[in-house]
Image (cartoon, rainbow, N blue to C red):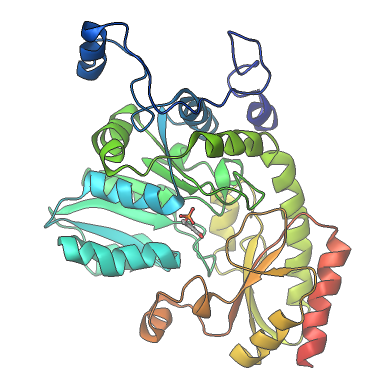
Length: 394
Ligand SMILES: Cc1ncc(COP(=O)(O)O)c(C=O)c1O
């Protein structure tokens, strides 16, 4: 099966063997009964397999986890209440007090807040390296030591679309037996195959392209059986940030149309990038599918396609940006991304407002940067709306 079929079928259809239901059943049950006292004890000790309590496992979550592992090319997966739950739980599963992790910058503002404000309270140190020159930056600054327990990357990076060289990073990290994680939310398994490049842990905010319709919040980690044992069974079930079964159903539904949505997203995004690059008012466009992207060659090599996230800087800076956003009628001024609707926002004051002005400058997030998640609407309507923005700043 090709990927466009795999997203529809999963490993096989129908989704439920007992009933031959084409769509998967949603098991809302929080609790599962035991046949007798010994059966309960056997389930808890691991002697027997079976459901106990939904925080530990649930048939609908299991179905989604198995489908995501299948699509991503991993052995196992763990579904979370949000992308942030996936990221925080993964870090806590692998790092103890006194350890450090190396992280690519820039990174999503919520992840930055976790790394910058919460982890230091638990004596977990974060060491930053530039996403666009990641391994060299790690080497030049001697960031690895015996307490380095994880390398966490985000590629393409939010909001600048910097690309981390995942293969080189994995080869480097494995010399020290350090696992590499990538937040692949911007790309999805359709645009990027991190496990094939040697990455150990693939992280998602499924809230974005996997769901696709801005109606559900969730996260996912795909990895090896051994790492999922640590992340899910040794950490997530006790920290408690599991996905709700109804939400899992929405992601299963979203997955089936991911490839057709993504094809349209990319078709539109290529045209939007081209349009923006032709505008005198635009200082720079950041889109991995454009030759002007500083890491275009790497993006071509590492990704199957450029996805549909982009950013641009207006020559008029922040003030022009405000006028531009206020002129939008179709594109929705909102955070989040990966939705059928085109979403436009200002990272410095919205998604990345957790960064101080100093941190923004250090991470290369310009005050005048505008981020667009290109939707699947008619391209002519999207371009006409952007034209309204340019008219407003002229
Ligand atoms: C790249 C990236 N990772 C993680 C997250 C966090 O995901 P969630 O909002 O589902 O917790 C986001 C949210 O915008 C994101 O953009």
